[in-house]
Image (cartoon, rainbow, N blue to C red; front, side, top):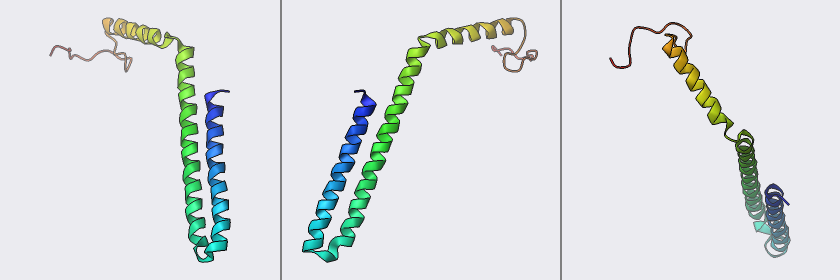
Length: 113
């Protein structure tokens, strides 16, 4: 069982627990204090909404982390080599008097002035 599935099961368990507590509380409150049922439903709905939002945020964060790990594993250092190759080509263009950003000739300013 991978981490994403485990996280989803935990999220489902938390939401199911909140719903169960809400239903039991609603039944007890309806029997004991019927005038407080409306406030209880409002608070229970808010708690379930917060729990669902938190579960969604954790799920998306976990998915993003998995994608980043996948990219790091798949590139295997090749991005660094590509950056070095681009820097080498930029130096070659500068040596030949061409601006690497525009492709035009270099203007008359030097880095030492």
